[in-house]
Image (cartoon, rainbow, N blue to C red; front, side):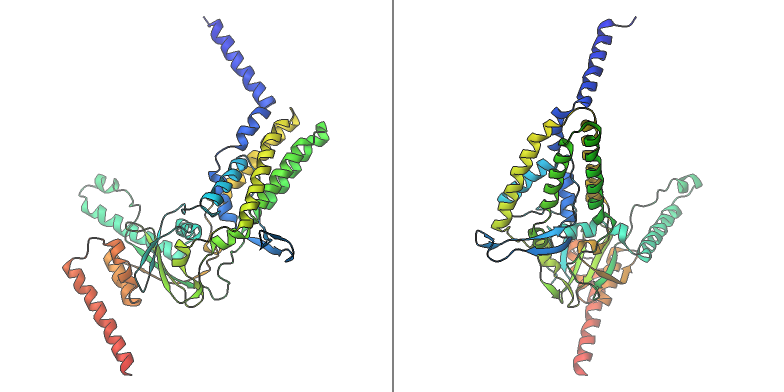
Length: 417
């Protein structure tokens, strides 16, 4: 027999759920305070992509500083923006910066000549190396895949029975692949390309405002439009500080240094990037810090106060059309934020415009580094401590000494002529 008390409890639970979703104004404030991690990554990825720069007259100043801002490509308003607005204030006051302190994909930068190594705190370098398996050139992917298949075939040859051979799994990776790039002389370094994701925020804003109009016609409810418009304006304004651009590309330009970018020992790829008097100094980029200006801090404080006002006013959203439309607006905004935060993108979006030149890959890591050293002096050596922290075998040391002798003979012949 059915338990009457259980049926009553279940009916009561369903009734509460229906009440919550028919009039969820009480939970809107909670939704607006959702974790800001996704929004933080989306803003870090989108920031610095400005339509144009605006500078007010010299007579208009804040604490003696001129007022200027970028009209940026926006990120859509969504649940979680209030929490992010407050975290921006904490970051700009406590850490004196807007971008995340650490890149979301750890890597290291090695100077190809001096062999100095730096940990990376740059957002764009972290994204560059994180997304590399997706945007790598087809010939690079084909070469790596061929080495993986060769390794798999060797593993199968060690097995004696057909069943054992069939059970051999495809290796997830193989020897190191060093891919050589140079700075593209046809594009301005530090100026990001725009792709369809860059434009998605503007498109989503239009859709959200269109949805916000529906309650006006259906129930003469203006609250959803007012809340959405204010949230959109605040979200867009958050990306318009020039501080984003200053932090993102805080480095010397037109350098002649060469750099290696890699996740470290055990990784599949290392990128050797030649600046050739046209590129950005990646060592600067990895560790540079540009303190936030007073005007930026005041602007972030004002935005935080208005975000709190938006949080308090969101409880006025009415039942019916207002409820459904506001949930749809916030949900669609979250999808756009996730898209911007997570979608793999090419190097041009980071403002690093690269041209593929060469690739070195052998069956073993040590042979790959030797191959790099034979083509590019000191570059292979610069990676030895990273990929062989415990030193080399005696026979490997002899190979490196032979390569060093060949380079010395080339220099002697050049100076003699």
